[in-house]
Image 1: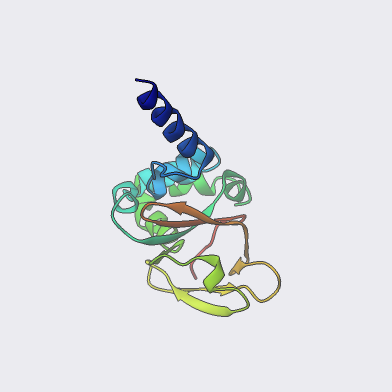
Image 2: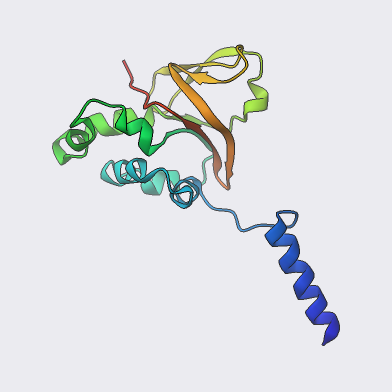
Length: 160
C-alpha cells in the first residue's frame, strides 16, 4: 500500500513538473488552452478547418493572436466570418499552415520560402536575431502539439 502510494506520488510529481510523460493536445486544443487565440478558433470553426487541424498532421501553424486580428481594419474579421466569405477565410487561414513540423532550430540563420497549404509561399527569415514570417514577427516559437507545432505571430498573414 505504501509502495503504491509512493509510486502514485512520484508519477504525479513527474507529470506535473514536466519531466514525465504529459498528455499531449492537438494544434487546436493547444491554441484554445493558451487563451489568446479566440478569434483564430472562431475563424477555424467558421472555415470548417477544426477537424483538419485536429487530424494527424504534422502541421506547422503560424498562429496570430487575438491582438494580431485587432490590427486588421475595422470590420474585416466580421466580414470574413460571414458564410458568403468562407472561401476567402479558408484561403487566409490555410496561408498560415505549412505541411510538416518545422521547428525554429532548423531555421536558425536562414532565410527561406515555405509552401503553405493555401498553395503559395511565405518567406521565413531567421537571419536577424529573431524570426519573421513575411511581415509578422514570431513572438513565441516551438509551441509543441501532438500533431505539429505552433509559432505564435503578431500579425495576420494575408496571401497576395
